[in-house]
Length: 63
Image 1 (cartoon, rainbow, N blue to C red):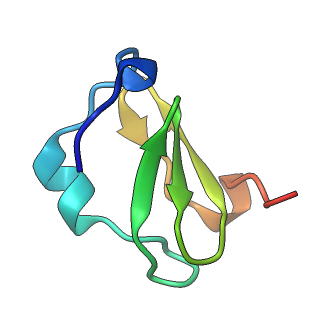
Image 2 (tube, one colour):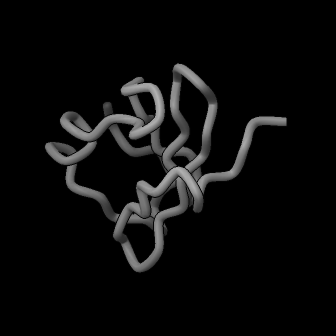
């Protein structure tokens, strides 16, 4: 999984992105802008100061 130009403001280690999963459904997470979006359930977790906040209560629900 590689970063795109829209993700340049968020710097997460590629190895971290390979091992972390959604705490809700254990699905794969994709970096989209400043959020980690679950490819399974669709929850979007914020990234604050380059630290993923993987708390279900902090996640944005899919529309």
